[in-house]
Image (cartoon, rainbow over the protein chains, first blue to last red):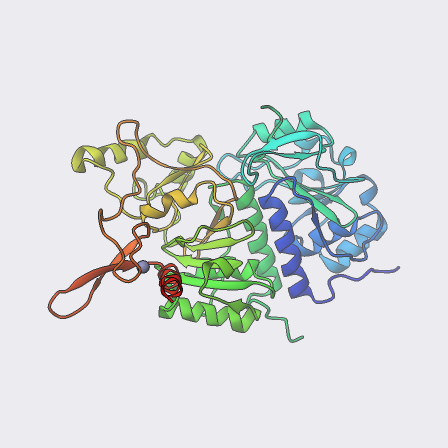
Length: 186
Length: 282
Ligand SMILES: [Zn+2]
C-alpha cells in the first residue's frame, strides 16, 4: 500500500490553500489554481488539497462512486482521520456529479442552523467560465460557470438560506458555487 | 517542527474556524456558531477578530490593525506585534498596502480594493439582542425572517427623537435577507459596507459567532420610506490637521481650559493627506 504524501509543511501549506479556497468561495465561478500535490486515484490534486485543508476527525465524509476506492479510503484514514459515512450524515462529500446525485440525500441545514449543511466537492473533467449566468454575493456584475445540472443547482439555491455549497475541482483547479449564488435569469 | 504554531492556533482549531468562515461567506449575514479558543489577550481586545485573522493569514500577507481608526493604540500595536511574531507577516499602517486589516469600530476612509480582507472585532453579534435576550428566540426570528419587532422599535425611536437614535452599530439588512449587526462602527461607515470589493469578516469571541459579507454584497441600513437612512456626522466640521471634510472626525480635548478640536479618526488617512499636502507645497 502506498500512501501519497500530504502537505509538506502543514500549517503554512494549509494556510495558503485555505486562502485560495476562501478566494474561490468569496468569488463564485472564479477559477483558482491550487498547488500540485500527489493525490490518491481517482481524486484530483485540487480535491485532495481541499480535504487536507478542511476535513478532519470532526467532519464526517462521504465518498461517492469511484471515489469510494481503497486508495482514497486509505489516504483519508491516514491523512484526515475523518469518519466515512453515508450521504445523510456527511459534512463533506467527494465524488463525480452523477455519483453524488440526488442532492436531497445530503444535510441541507435547518432554518435555525442553515450552516449545518454539507459541502460537496464535485470532481469535473474541466472547469469553464461559460454556460450558466451567475449573479449574487461575490459577483460584481455577472459570472459564468459551466454547471453539471442547472435545474438541480437552481433548486438548491432556491432553498436559501438552507442548501448545499459546492466546490468544483478539476486537476489543480477549483471553483466554488455557494448556495447564495443566483443561477440564470436576467 | 518550528512552524507548528504558525498563526498561534493549532491546526484543528484553524480548520474549525476556516470551515465556519466558508459557511459564513456562503450565507451572507448569518451568524455561524464556532468554538471560541483562549487567546493570549482579554476578550475586550478582540479575540473573535484575532481568531478570524489567525485562520486567514498567510506568510505573504501585509497586516494592518486599527482601533477606532488609529494604528497606534495599545490594542492595535499589540495585535500587530502578535501576528508579526506568530505568523511572520509584514505589518503596515497604510490601508492601501494592507492585504488583511483587522479593525475595531471603524472602516478605513481609503476605499478598500479587490483582494483585501477586512476583519471586524465584534462585541455583540446579535442585532436583535436588545429586543429579545433569549438566543433561541432571536434564532427563530432570523429563521422566520420575523423582523417586525425590530422595525417597530426603530419607528418608536423616530416618534421619540425624530430620527433613529443610533449613532453606532446601526443595523443592516444583507441581500434583503438577514438583519446584521455591523459591529460598533459609526453609522457614518455603514455605506462602506455595501457593495464593497473587499471581503468583510466579523468575529465575536465571547459569543462565539462568525459572519461575513462577501465582496459586492448588497447591504442596506434599516430605514423607513418617510425617514430614509442618513450617514451624517457633525455638520460643517473639518479636520483640524488635514482639512478633510469627508472623513469621520473625533473630538479631541486639547487643553485643561476645555479647548477642543475635530480630527480624523482614521490616522492613516489623515497622515496620508498631510504628506500629500506637504509634497504639493514643496
Ligand atoms: Zn485629518
